[in-house]
Image (cartoon, rainbow, N blue to C red; front, top):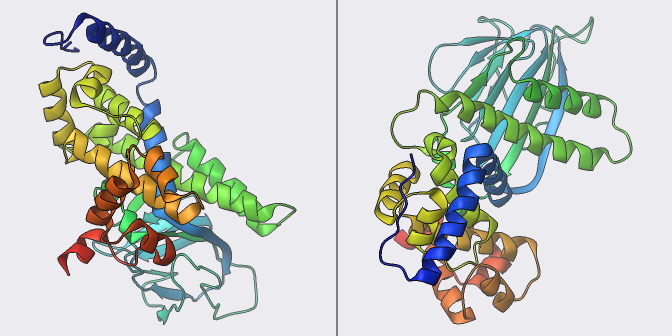
Length: 352
């Protein structure tokens, strides 16, 4: 049920609120999950830096590899053929078979091997630079295991709170009829890497981003039904909160108010504020500010737009106000951020 806030507004303001309420209520009720996908796309665009990497690796027994922790990156492994024994960051070993996908969003270390008693070699390459990952102990005979591995570099200064909700490892076992989009992305990526053709760099990069989106979507889909109160899985699945998030992501420069965002969600101001804060972990306007400055950081890093133009695009009326807010969030002035980037998370900068 939706609660309409119809008190304390003038007739013209109320008409505008009613129109927005009707339009966004229809959107929320007919395609409730679409905004969540858009938010995930934005999260990846903000956090990922550089080109993602991937490799197809053929292994011959015996083989074993320890992947060291790599803070500031995320990596995945897909078993294309054969099997593998995985020792995750915590918990019991997992036997992986063809089609299984494992994703490590926080860059924690892990071990993979063909058998429990196989000697483990150290790996000098991180998940965002996967080739060459393995050295086979035998050069004769067909491969016993074929893996598709890859990684993404993440900007620690722009870590979206959605990342903190993810576990150390996401395990997606292959099951007939489930996660067909993940399987399709894996097949396309594997084929492109095995036989590169014209435009392969662009195709592989796009497929890696697509695979990352599909992995995260599959995990959030699984979490929606049984997650506890709070958390981004619930926030992205909630029609009202998701509609408000989508609006903020689509137009960060708009002078958002809690009442307007509540109207988009079909909730009263107070009810929306409570629900948003519970699910997202911060107040609506605090999230608006954070997203504006995260967007500004991406523009500073990826474009040559003037500071005044960036300030206007993220909702600041003056370059001075923008610079003050940006330094408070990221620990350095916009001009310095553009020159140097953000080597450590902003909270760590502000503590020093």
